[in-house]
Length: 94
Image 1 (tube, rainbow, N blue to C red):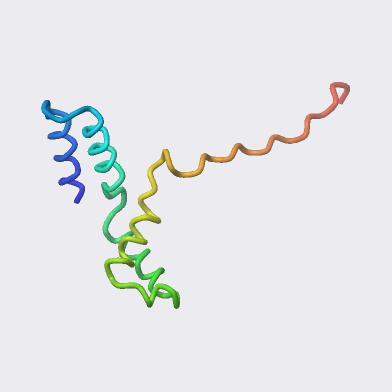
Image 2: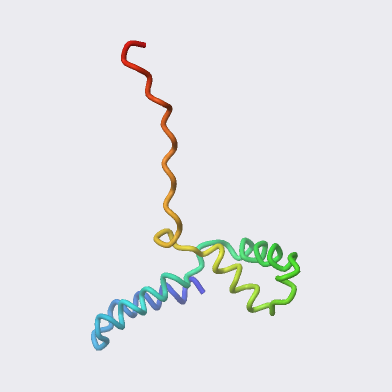
Protein backbone atom coordinates (compact mmCIF):
# COMPACT_ATOMS: atom_id res chain seq x y z
CA UNK A 1 0.00 0.00 0.00
CA UNK A 2 2.81 2.35 0.84
CA UNK A 3 4.60 1.90 -2.49
CA UNK A 4 1.30 2.38 -4.34
CA UNK A 5 0.70 5.68 -2.54
CA UNK A 6 4.27 6.82 -3.29
CA UNK A 7 3.81 6.06 -6.97
CA UNK A 8 0.43 7.78 -7.02
CA UNK A 9 2.00 10.93 -5.55
CA UNK A 10 4.78 10.91 -8.13
CA UNK A 11 2.43 10.45 -11.08
CA UNK A 12 -0.06 13.02 -9.81
CA UNK A 13 2.71 15.56 -9.44
CA UNK A 14 3.84 15.11 -13.02
CA UNK A 15 0.32 15.09 -14.54
CA UNK A 16 -0.34 18.23 -16.57
CA UNK A 17 -3.86 17.59 -17.79
CA UNK A 18 -5.59 17.52 -14.39
CA UNK A 19 -6.88 20.71 -12.74
CA UNK A 20 -4.95 21.84 -9.66
CA UNK A 21 -7.91 21.18 -7.34
CA UNK A 22 -8.12 17.55 -8.47
CA UNK A 23 -4.37 17.09 -8.02
CA UNK A 24 -4.55 18.54 -4.53
CA UNK A 25 -7.41 16.23 -3.58
CA UNK A 26 -5.57 13.23 -5.02
CA UNK A 27 -2.34 13.97 -3.16
CA UNK A 28 -4.26 14.62 0.07
CA UNK A 29 -6.05 11.28 -0.32
CA UNK A 30 -2.72 9.49 -0.89
CA UNK A 31 -1.20 11.18 2.17
CA UNK A 32 -4.13 10.27 4.42
CA UNK A 33 -4.25 6.63 3.38
CA UNK A 34 -0.53 5.84 3.27
CA UNK A 35 0.35 3.43 6.09
CA UNK A 36 2.52 5.08 8.73
CA UNK A 37 3.26 2.01 10.84
CA UNK A 38 4.45 -1.55 10.36
CA UNK A 39 1.78 -4.16 9.47
CA UNK A 40 2.27 -5.88 12.83
CA UNK A 41 1.12 -2.71 14.59
CA UNK A 42 -2.17 -2.72 12.68
CA UNK A 43 -2.65 -6.42 13.47
CA UNK A 44 -2.03 -5.79 17.17
CA UNK A 45 -4.55 -2.94 17.15
CA UNK A 46 -7.07 -5.15 15.34
CA UNK A 47 -6.68 -7.78 18.06
CA UNK A 48 -7.25 -5.11 20.71
CA UNK A 49 -10.42 -3.96 18.95
CA UNK A 50 -11.64 -7.52 18.43
CA UNK A 51 -11.17 -8.31 22.15
CA UNK A 52 -14.06 -5.97 22.97
CA UNK A 53 -17.70 -7.03 22.71
CA UNK A 54 -18.32 -4.23 20.22
CA UNK A 55 -15.33 -5.32 18.10
CA UNK A 56 -16.61 -8.88 17.77
CA UNK A 57 -19.65 -7.56 15.89
CA UNK A 58 -17.42 -6.02 13.20
CA UNK A 59 -16.42 -7.67 9.95
CA UNK A 60 -12.71 -8.24 9.42
CA UNK A 61 -12.47 -5.35 6.92
CA UNK A 62 -14.28 -3.01 9.31
CA UNK A 63 -11.99 -4.05 12.15
CA UNK A 64 -8.92 -3.34 10.00
CA UNK A 65 -10.26 0.04 8.91
CA UNK A 66 -10.94 1.02 12.52
CA UNK A 67 -7.39 0.00 13.51
CA UNK A 68 -6.01 1.87 10.50
CA UNK A 69 -7.91 5.02 11.51
CA UNK A 70 -6.65 4.82 15.10
CA UNK A 71 -2.98 4.34 14.23
CA UNK A 72 -2.72 6.36 11.04
CA UNK A 73 -3.72 9.78 12.34
CA UNK A 74 -1.58 12.33 10.50
CA UNK A 75 0.30 14.89 12.55
CA UNK A 76 -1.86 17.74 11.24
CA UNK A 77 -5.05 16.07 12.51
CA UNK A 78 -3.65 14.80 15.79
CA UNK A 79 -4.22 16.98 18.83
CA UNK A 80 -1.44 19.46 19.45
CA UNK A 81 0.98 18.54 22.23
CA UNK A 82 0.27 20.28 25.49
CA UNK A 83 2.91 22.58 26.94
CA UNK A 84 4.34 21.45 30.22
CA UNK A 85 3.30 23.45 33.24
CA UNK A 86 5.90 25.86 34.50
CA UNK A 87 6.58 26.01 38.22
CA UNK A 88 5.08 28.96 40.05
CA UNK A 89 7.35 31.95 39.90
CA UNK A 90 9.08 32.86 43.13
CA UNK A 91 9.11 36.44 44.38
CA UNK A 92 12.21 38.44 43.42
CA UNK A 93 13.43 38.72 47.03
CA UNK A 94 13.90 34.96 47.45
